[in-house]
Length: 160
Image 1 (cartoon, rainbow, N blue to C red):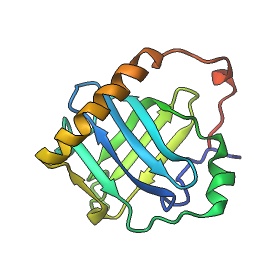
Image 2 (image 1 turned 60 degrees about the vertical axis):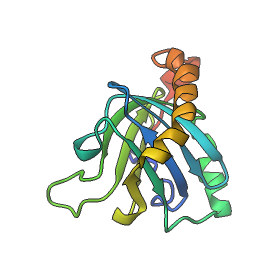
Image 3 (image 1 turned 90 degrees about the horizontal axis):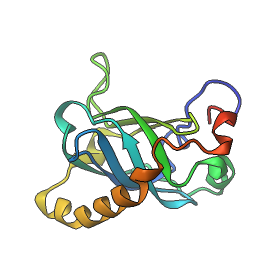
């Protein structure tokens, strides 16, 4: 895409659900289900902030739309997503109403951002954490060795 604009996934309407796990300091792993793409594993260096630091969060988007247009726009999204957490918070800015905000940069330096309605995300319950734990461990084990490795295409990054 042209310009220095973050990929917002159709103003987040193409984000169906997911989880992010920050229980291991310095990494956020998870899985986000997108329209057309389905589940995408995520491995980010960094931490969540505020009340969700060190926790597992879940989200389910009440505004999700599985639109055909998503396939055309999201076709260049890297799978899996490996990169650096920019800001992951339930209260991203003091002058805005608190809401779930997930922002990161991929290894190809592509910029991604998801904003959800306040009621669409929560800190996972103990039962949810127990369910997510083996998935998180698998994602962390599979993807941690890929973080920091520059692909041949990494120099050709663009803001998507």
